[in-house]
Image (cartoon, rainbow, N blue to C red):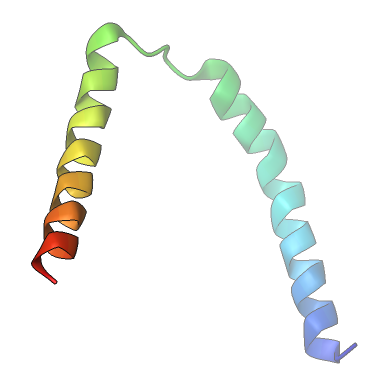
Length: 59
């Protein structure tokens, strides 16, 4: 193994170690989704999928 790979593994491990407690806290204390929230997420995704299909059809 190269020394840069070892440093990257150490840095990624430290990042996961520091972010794990914060992620658990955010998941525990986040607001719950309501009915209208899903529509706000699905509408832009549908537009992106439609745009990609349009681009594929134009080729």
